[in-house]
Length: 481
Ligand code: GDP
Figure 1 (cartoon, rainbow, N blue to C red):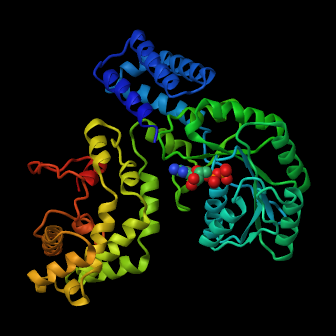
Figure 2: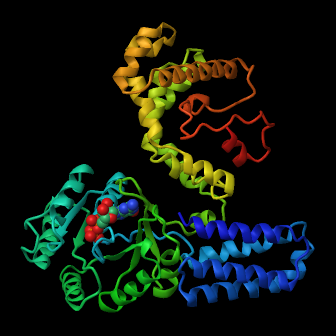
Figure 3: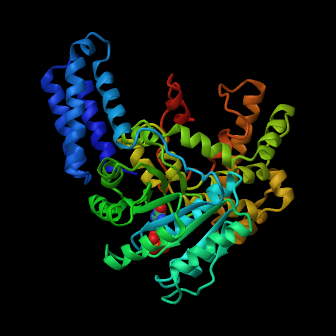
C-alpha cells in the first residue's frame, strides 16, 4: 500500500536524521522532497502545497527549541505525522445510525469502483457487530450486478432484496423504495442500497442517483472510489458532490499499486471524510479507515494495531485455550494443533499483507523479502498435513519412507517437501519443550510459538544468517521472532 510514497518519505527522513542540529535550509530541503514525493504519488497540487507549507511553517517555528533536544529530526517527523493524519481526515468516522431504524445507506460511484463488492463487505462488517442488514439491488444497469449482489449476500448470509432481474430491466427507484419498505416490515435495522454507476460521469447517472436519493432519503450517502485512479478520482468525486452529494468516502483497491493520490487528496478537496477502506477482493478485506494508522504506514511505522486486531479475531478463544492448556500441562504439540494454527493464519488473510503492517516493512531488505514471500506455501503445507492420518499427525515418529511417499502423492507435493516439513515441525516441537522447561530463551505465548511458520514460505530459500543477539526494540524483536 502506497509503497512508493512510503519509501520516499523514509529516504527523506533518513537523510534528515543524519544531520544532527537542523538549519532552516534543512527544513526547506525535506519539505521540497516531501512535496515532490506527494506530486509523484498523484496528490492534488493544492493539497501538496498546503500540506508542505504547513510543515515548513510549523517546523521553522519550533526550530530553535527542537535543536536543544537530543533528537531534532524526531520532532520534525512528529509534525509530518500530525499533518498527515490531518489531511487524511483526523480521526476515524463511524456510520451514523438513524434515530428510527432502519438506517439507510446509499452507495454511489463509478462503475467498477467496487460498489457491489463493498455492499457485501459492509453488510458483513455491520452484521458482525450485531446488526441485521438488508441489501437492496438497485443497480439494474450493469450486466449481472443483481446476480453478483445475490451471490455476495449469500456468502455473508445477509438477505438481498432483488425483485428485478436487472441487465437493463426494472425501475431502480421503485426497487430502492420497496426495499426500504421491506426492511421496515421485516425489522432490518440497516438497509444498504447498491446503485448503478457508469464508466464516466454523465447527466443520466447523476439524475438517477439523485432520484433514488430523494425517494429514500438515506442517512448516509457513501461515495465509493477506486484508489488506483489517483487524482482523477478526486475530480469525479467533485462532480458527484455537486450532482448528488455524499456524506463520506469509501476507498477501494488499496491493496493494488495505488500511489496514494486519491487517499491523500479527497478529504481535503471535498471536505468529506474517508469512512471505510477495502484492501482486497475477499469480504474480509475491509475495515474502518483510520487516518492515524494510514499515516503510520506511510511513514514506515507499520500498523501494529490492525495487525493485533486481526490476530485476535483469527485465533478463536477455544483453539487458544486448548493450546495454552497443552502448553501448561506439558503435552506435546501435534500436527493437528499445527493445522489449527495454519487455519488461523489463513483467516488472517494474506501473509504478505499482514507482514506489510510490521514497522519497517517498506524498507529495502524487508521489502525484498516480502516480495519473495509466497502465500500459496501455507496452502501447500496445509495439504501435506491434511494428507496424514490422525495417527501420523499425533506421532510424526511413525512417518517412515512409505508413509511419506503416500503423503507426498496425496498432497501433490514432493517427498522432499514432506521431509522438510516434518523436520521443521519436530524442531519446533523441541523448541516448544525447551520453552516450557525454561531451557530456551524465548517466551512467546503458546499458540504463537516457533512452529507458527514452519513452512519457511519464502519462494527462494534465504541463506541462513548467523544467530544475532535479540533486539531491545519490541517491534523489532517481534519481527525477528
Ligand atoms: P461496481 O461496478 O462498482 O459494483 O464494482 P464491483 O464491486 O463489481 O468491483 C469491480 C471489480 O473490482 C471486481 O472485479 C471486484 O472484485 C474488484 N474489487 C472491488 N474491491 C476491490 C478491492 O478492494 N481490491 C481489489 N483488488 N479488487 C477489488
